[in-house]
Length: 148
Image (cartoon, rainbow, N blue to C red; front, top):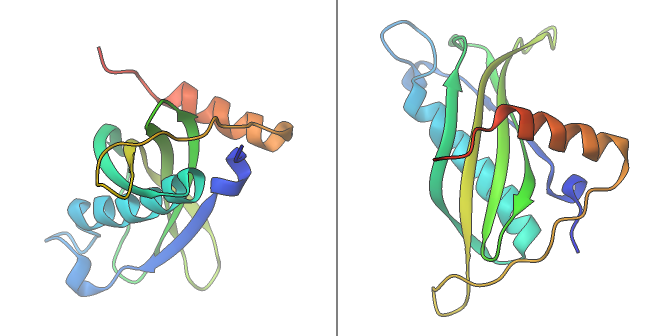
């Protein structure tokens, strides 16, 4: 069974002028795309199968990421169902010179694992090992509001 820490991915994207909105900060759609891509990587690492986005359960923009800074995205699986995988993501603005960070965005995406036939297929159970995994899972559960 895969562990939460085995699904942890951190990725960076430099915010260029072509990624920006009228306020010289990353366009929300670009950030969503980058987070979706990193989240899919965590889901596929967990499931060992192709995973596609099924839902965006939560997405919160807290502050902008200006052009010239780096969007740092962290992602990990925090829950698994029969064929679905829930992934918690956070984005940070990171100064590329100093490394100083500030959280800008948090989200919860649901992915579905697909078999060779393109239909939903089963995923393993998630194992949470150690204090760091427990803290990450608790952070995700505290941030995620289940759909009604």
